[in-house]
Length: 287
Image 1 (cartoon, helix red, strand yellow):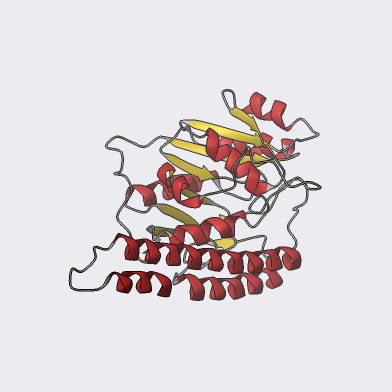
Image 2: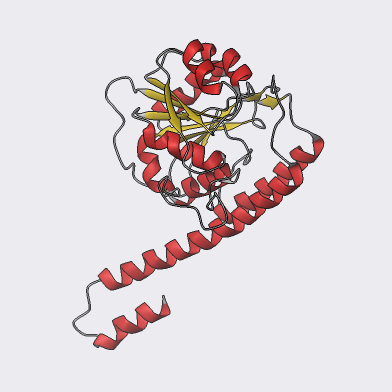
């Protein structure tokens, strides 16, 4: 596990003095057969939250049968990003784990993510490309695309990510304040059922905003297994272009936040008694 911190900021909250509670968020759409395998393997935690994406099979019924006590919520729009946001909103644990329903994520790795957070990280990021990680499911094209997107992300974010496009992550609940994800009650624009951030770009959005917030990041080795049942909705080309667009969007957002912070600092700074009032206004205009 490697720990890195782009411009580490002061921790927003202190770690709990007792063992942290864990919420596992599992977005799923028509994953009944996979849930039957993976849900019983999840560790005994504070809560497991299934976010159903309007499944047409018996996803919900299967989840309740194989994991008694599971919390079920329905997503409010469409897309993995919205499903995760709905799950995050329902979570009550100290730690939130993002977990895919297709059997590609190994439940046995969850303690390693939790340990990384307890040791001081704000965000524990799974990586298939750090020592100890791997994948049984990645193609040469996806590997090359991930390398290229990593290169761009690290360049604009001043990070050392090894695996930008991987969704197995965990974080302290207070991190949600920094993500500013689309509100789950926000209506989608006319003619669509999604807003920006509702799709597969969600992992990139989260990784970018964690870095921009200056939070402490720990990479955790993770092995991606093959999906057992069904087919993935991922497309190496279209989703790669979506991630590239996301990096551009998040870079512009980071610049706006930085300019706003600089302007706020200028406005809040006390005026010098020997300087004319115009000098403070000029500084504000320059920012």
